[in-house]
Image (cartoon, rainbow, N blue to C red; front, side, top):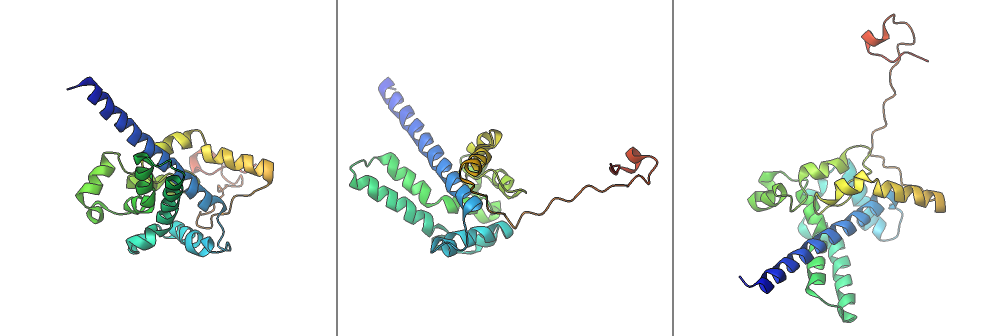
Length: 214
């Protein structure tokens, strides 16, 4: 095989991977903004985007019962608008088109992560197991209290890296210090139970397993 052809194919592969990671990262940013600062009271987007997102934390599988268009209309509008602006500016490239297509269905990929293999079918299930799409197991971290990590919804690749460095938590702390902006309280997160105490009534606290009162 011609070496130039091998190089071109390899370069295209790198571009595709870069686009997927870029869209995944942007999906994480938008998801984080919704979860952390979105308000029901906001005009238009509050009812259209934020309220369903809040409900999703209480009932993760609820949105799997809606139709394709209802799940993806918001991301389709955003992706289509960006592609339109890029085209008008004369910057159109096939990578922008790929990004718009993937970006338009990020909520659908998110939906697949909440479905069973039987519901998804063999193709999507294979792509999830091959780590090309976000898997139910990978996304489950986001729905584990305190529900403040693993925001990216396209792949399983970025979340572990961002979570390891507390990427979003660091941004939140920075915004709080510099602007006073507070993260919205997630009402779906169950409050932590206080450790029980034997209050000194037990002669062997290690044996009874309760924390000795101070």
